[in-house]
Length: 191
Image (cartoon, rainbow, N blue to C red; front, side, top):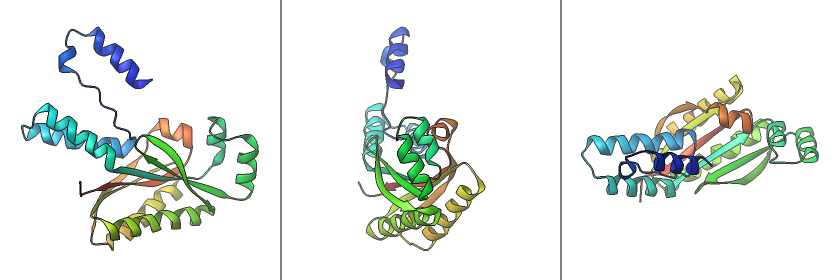
């Protein structure tokens, strides 16, 4: 819907050749990374074709993992049913979701906040041992989610192949759909 609105707006201008619509296939800090990289390339004098190719390449190698703390938000948004929300909340199930190539999928079901944090810590360790990566942390909600990102950063600090880029607070749109969340964005340095 957002892309379609952008296409309509582009057609309404008198400068269609100067406007490029890009599907970032990402949200929040992963999308911000693409914008910052494009701006850096503009400053370096790179051409539009090279910049667009770079952004497309970044979209292909970016993965975002996030843990949802309160299932009621997913229920209200129609992502899960009422029964799943009630049972999952009773059992303290915390889904870890993955955003890759523009699609959100279930990565794992964990038990409790500690289980979700441990699962994401494991991803940081595994990815940091395999490749040189850029790592972002993100959070939204309560102080607990914020503290979880600090724990993830400390984990990353001990891994040589990880370049930590910063912690970001997710926006209201993600918060309204997912509720309190914390997670990571991983971008491989090798393309």
